[in-house]
Picture 1 (cartoon, helix red, strand yellow):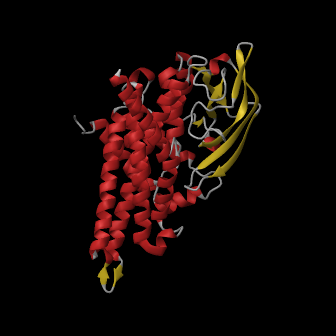
Picture 2: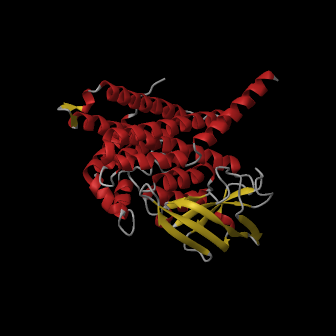
Picture 3: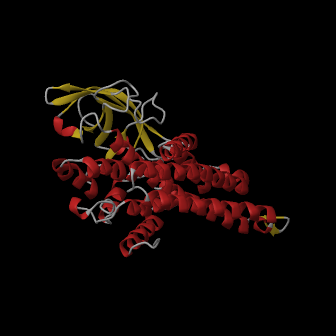
Amino acid sequence: MDFNFTEEQTMIRDSLARLIREQYDFDTRMGVVKSDSGWRPEMWAQLAELGLFMAPFSEEDGGLGGGPIDAMVVMEEFGKGLVVEPFIPSVVCGGGFLKHAGSAAQKEEHLQAIMGGASTFAFAYAEPRGRYNLADLETTAKKDGAGYVLNGHKAVVVGAPWADKLIVTARTGGDRRDTGGISVFIVDKGADGVTTRDYPTVDGRRASEVYLENVAVGADALIGSEGEALPLIEQVVDEATAAACAEAVGAMGVAHQMTVEYSRQRKQFGTPIGKFQVLQHRMVDMFMEHEQSISMTYMATLKLGEDAVERKKAVSAAKVRIGQSGRFVGQESIQIHGGMGMTEELAVGHYFKRLTMIDSEFGNVDHHMRRYTALSAEDVKVAAE
């Protein structure tokens, strides 16, 4: 198997790395995170100009003919720079729904706007009592003539303060945890009945609680078939999970590099602490965890196009590895830096915060361990039959 990146993917990586290095240094990022808006629309426009938002989409849809690997390349660089701009919510999730199930009219109106950076989407799927069960929905969408009326509460909608459109999952039939009766809608965030409560997250991003009260949408807001959206949601969430794993790989790499560099400069008893064998072993362990995370992320990304069971197993295996490795690398980075690793002014602590948040996004280690075990058990049962 060829693990070399294409010329276009290498160009994307190099261009994005240069932009982040020149315009997204740690001090600049901290200023942005602490600002009222929490992001830079002008940076979002620059990212669009580089063609990053077009990279994961086919030429038939107006993109550059790429796919999940292109998203992986982008998110790894985002992880290195702790970029807060909402690539996963808008491009991977919003664009993913439209790419897989959008009508020609929806693609023309919304997908083109996403790729051009003119429109920003947020994915409103989580609910206060839903945990990581994508089918656990209390938000409803009831038929009203040709359209629908939505009611419900979506929790921790990342990127919603910056979005003008929401992708909302809602129940059009069945009971609360039924796998059937689930649909997906495009909702204008400025529509009557939509209210939000915005707040910063611990890792420097922004999220919202989204409340829907008798929000009327037309039939053209429905993505795909009514009541049959769970497989589509699972596919898009798996793609977003793989992209988040790539972001973690980038963050882990920088945290490790910072720790190695610090160990060369910090001295105790007149000797750099990096010469102490016990710390060398710990930094080698960090390196191995990072390398294993890279391999698992590549595997998950390459298997996104396979059948649902293989895709889910690969993504869950990668997410478990990322969660465990991210925690280890983050904790070791903080401990080797000592007390200063806990300060707000030192970047390494912010990488640990982001790695911690990635572990909880789209399912934590325990959730994905259970999912992988259940899928493997089903494989054994089928083979036995």
